[in-house]
Each structure stands twice: as C-alpha cells, then as structure tokens.
View 1 (cartoon, rainbow, N blue to C red):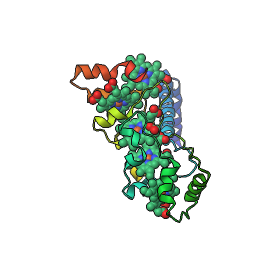
View 2: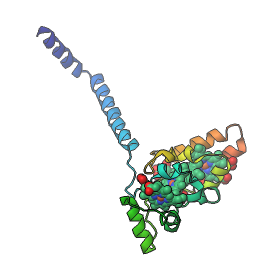
View 3: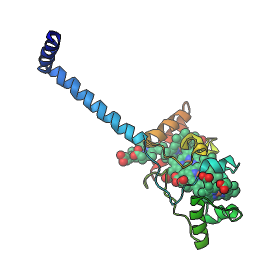
View 4: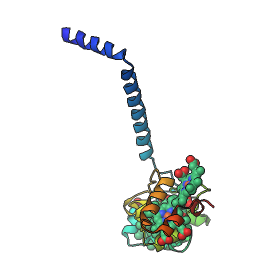
Length: 188
Ligand code: HEC
Ligand code: HEC
Ligand code: HEC
Ligand code: HEC
Ligand code: HEC
C-alpha cells in the first residue's frame, strides 16, 4: 500500500515536469503513425467481378506474358480478353461459381471489368518495356503473384520507391543517374 502511494506520488511529480508531456506526446504520435502504417500495409485487394486465381493458372504452366503480353513490348502490360479465357474454358465443365461468372461474360460477349490493383496517378509515366529489357522480373515489383489466389496490391509504391531502385541501378554511371532521376523521365 505504502509503495503504491509512493509510486503515485512519483508519477504526480513527474506529470508536473514538461519533459513528461513531451515524451508522452512523442509516444502518442509514434503510436498513431505505427497504427496508420499498419493499416496501409494490410491494404486489401479490391473486389473483382470474379476472383481470378493466379496460383492455379501459373501452376498449370501458363506464362505471365501469355496473358500480359504488353509487358515486354509496350508501356502497359495489358489484361487478357474474355475470348482468351474462353479459349480454354469452353472445353471445361466450369462448375465453380467464379467460372460461372466467366461463362456469363463469355456468353454475353462482354469484357470482364477488372478493377486495377497496381495503378499510378495520371501524372506519372511508367513503361514496362525498359524494365523488362533491363532484366527485371515481374516479381521485383509485383511480389509473388504466382502464389496468390487474388492479385494483392503492394503499398507505398510511390516516387521514393521508383527513385530508390533507379539510384541503385545507376550507381557509378553519372549519365544514367541523370536520366533515371530527371523529373521529365516520369512526369511528362
Ligand atoms: C490455358 C488455359 C486457361 C486459360 C487461358 C484460362 N484458364 Fe482458367 N483454368 C484453367 C484450368 C485448367 C483450370 C483448373 C481446372 C478447374 O479448376 O476446373 C482453371 C481454373 C479456373 C478457375 C477456378 C480457379 C480455382 O480457384 O479453382 C477460374 C475462376 C478460372 N479458371 C477463370 C479464368 C479466367 C477469368 C480466365 C481469363 C482471364 C482464365 N481462367 C484463363 C485453364 C485456363
Ligand atoms: C491465364 C491468364 C493469366 C496469367 C497466366 C497471369 N495473369 Fe496476371 N492477371 C490476369 C487477370 C485476368 C488479371 C486481372 C484480375 C486481377 O487483378 O486479379 C491479372 C492481374 C494481374 C496483375 C494486377 C494488374 C492490375 O490490375 O494492376 C498483375 C501485377 C499480374 N496479373 C501479374 C502477373 C504475373 C507476374 C504473372 C505470372 C507469374 C501473371 N500475372 C500470370 C491473368 C493472368
Ligand atoms: C519496375 C517495376 C515493374 C516490373 C518489373 C513489372 N511491373 Fe507491372 N506494373 C508496374 C507499375 C508501376 C504498374 C502501374 C502502372 C500504371 O498505373 O501506369 C504496373 C502495372 C501492371 C499491370 C496492370 C496494368 C497494365 O500495365 O496493363 C499488369 C497486368 C502488370 N503490371 C503485369 C506485369 C508483368 C506480367 C510483369 C513481368 C513480365 C511486370 N508487370 C513487371 C511495375 C512493374
Ligand atoms: C526494381 C527497380 C525499378 C523500379 C522499382 C522502377 N524502375 Fe524504372 N527503371 C529501372 C531500370 C533498371 C530501368 C532501365 C534503365 C536503363 O538501362 O536504361 C528503368 C527505366 C525507366 C524508364 C525509362 C527511362 C529512359 O528514359 O530510358 C522510366 C520512364 C521509368 N523507369 C519509370 C519508372 C517509374 C515511374 C517507376 C515507379 C512507378 C519505376 N520506374 C520503378 C528500374 C526500376
Ligand atoms: C523514377 C520516377 C520519378 C522521377 C524521376 C520523379 N518522380 Fe515525381 N513521382 C513519381 C511517382 C511514381 C509519383 C506518384 C506517387 C507519389 O505521390 O509518390 C510522383 C509524384 C510526384 C509529385 C506529387 C506528390 C504528391 O504528394 O502528390 C510531385 C510534385 C512530383 N512527383 C515531383 C517530381 C519532381 C519535381 C521530380 C524531379 C526532381 C520528380 N518528381 C521526379 C515518380 C517520379
């Protein structure tokens, strides 16, 4: 009891000193920031018209570039058309609920309105081609898509993320460094 009272007294004394409030304030800010970044890093994938399972399809031996052929030729990787899905699925039973959604789109001759998972703002210029040409793999930027049952977004793929890799890649090459960090390279 006596010890508890003494502790209380010490706390009260401490609370009168500004340093106590400064430290408490900083702690609260850090805690809030931590919670915030926790929420961001747990960013959920957007709901899709139907869940496309990468793990199943890549597991069958289908190449990324079969469905995303733009990735090595042009800016956008592109998404497969309903006809491309149907090319295989018309020969299948399609008993799973997600497959029945595919059947409905294929019968209607409509494209599936996939929701973007990885997307940069309009004022950013990104092009897949130079990245694939430089020997990067899809996984370097998109994570282990081939093990995912729905494509998962990766948070914080911001300007710092692009620049960190560009600086690392251009290390020791002044000309390349200037080109890869020039504002106009990514903002045009
Ligand atoms: C090269 C052939 C091929 C292509 C192209 C293909 N699929 Fe499949 N898909 C399969 C096979 C094989 C299975 C596994 C058999 C099964 O589950 O019935 C499968 C399974 C599925 C499943 C069930 C997945 C699960 O979780 O079990 C869905 C949904 C599906 N495909 C949708 C699509 C959509 C949408 C497209 C186009 C974007 C597509 N498939 C393109 C061959 C293909
Ligand atoms: C059979 C076709 C198929 C294959 C093979 C395939 N994908 Fe996909 N991929 C899709 C479809 C359909 C979507 C759109 C649905 C979604 O985002 O979940 C998609 C979405 C994605 C996205 C997110 C696109 C966005 O909206 O931002 C990435 C990244 C991706 N795929 C990478 C890969 C990589 C890497 C591989 C190889 C390991 C691969 N894909 C193999 C069909 C395919
Ligand atoms: C250097 C990083 C990087 C690499 C490597 C990379 N991507 Fe991407 N990918 C991105 C970024 C950034 C976006 C968003 C682009 C935008 O919104 O303008 C994106 C978007 C996509 C999309 C959706 C939009 C589109 O472009 O059609 C798909 C699908 C995709 N990537 C597939 C792939 C595949 C498949 C590979 C490997 C062959 C690959 N990516 C390699 C960074 C990368
Ligand atoms: C994992 C590393 C990596 C990441 C992440 C990355 N890049 Fe790159 N980027 C490269 C490499 C490597 C090159 C090719 C450099 C060369 O050999 O010319 C390149 C080239 C480019 C080019 C072509 C430059 C030119 O003039 O030749 C553009 C544009 C570009 N990146 C934009 C972006 C943007 C925007 C992002 C972020 C959304 C990004 N990059 C993220 C590695 C990366
Ligand atoms: C390697 C690619 C790359 C280069 C080089 C680059 N940026 Fe960016 N920038 C981005 C990306 C990606 C975003 C969008 C994501 C974000 O907000 O971080 C962005 C966002 C921005 C924004 C908006 C920030 C916001 O909070 O909305 C401004 C302003 C900007 N950049 C200015 C510049 C200037 C000035 C330079 C040259 C000194 C530059 N950028 C060079 C990739 C780049």
